[in-house]
Amino acid sequence: MSETYDVYAVQYARSQRPSRDFFMYKDPHDGPLPIFYYVWLIRNADRAIVVDMGFSAEMGKKRSREFLRCPGEGLRVLGVDPAEVETVVVTHMHYDHAGNVPLFPRATFVLQDAEMQFATGRDMRHKPMRMAFEVEDVVDLVRRNFEGRVRFVNGMEEIAPGVCVHHVGGHTRGLQAVSVETARGRLVLASDAVHFFENMTETNPFPIVADVGHMFDGYERLLRLAGDPDRLIPGHDPLVAELYPVAAGDPMIFELSKTPLRPSPLSGR
View 1 (cartoon, rainbow, N blue to C red):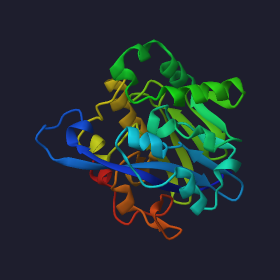
View 2: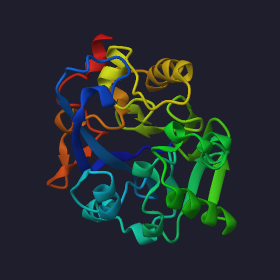
View 3: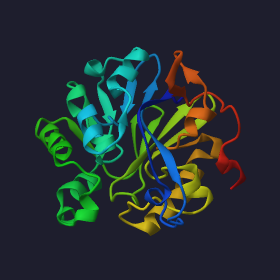
View 4: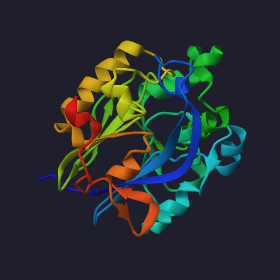
């Protein structure tokens, strides 16, 4: 019998940018929209798995993002010390997901083969392809690989009972989503396979993309995997903070394994 978990979205930063930055097909006259930055915690009595690591205050300043607090501080609110975490899933190696490697000195990092190949390969010659990567973050994970602390996967793999990673691609060549068994069914953390609910409801993808066709295919795959649109969680949507109850009395932590306070925008898709 599969284990079940509690799952949390931990916000650590936010920004407000022109809507054309978030959607491939947008009227350039549309006003600015907010974007939230999260890491995620998957936890039960036996284990704690962190999904993505966020970025640092220094990186937030460099990229003009409003840094709210260190992602590690949010994890500590939930009783998890980053220094003791043994498994970190890296959904992809963009700066806002693969920063802060030093916060996790004991962790093994779960990464798709295709993502390391992408981030260290020939595509990085081209500025538009590398713009969301930070070379030092990539090098940090290369170093952890040389230390034997990267667990490479290729496609779908169960990394713990009831927790699986799934190669989706699209946004990057090796992006992976995470499915988790919870008391309310299988939850899917889409990460940047789906930035916002609107990317799916309007079939309007985020414009940083390695393969648009794979991104559209990913929308369909993730919905099938979740089985219920209320169990698909996008990677950056501020609406997540409105749909899910606050956890641990902290206004920047949201319990995704609880029933949403109202139906997801995907419910009518």
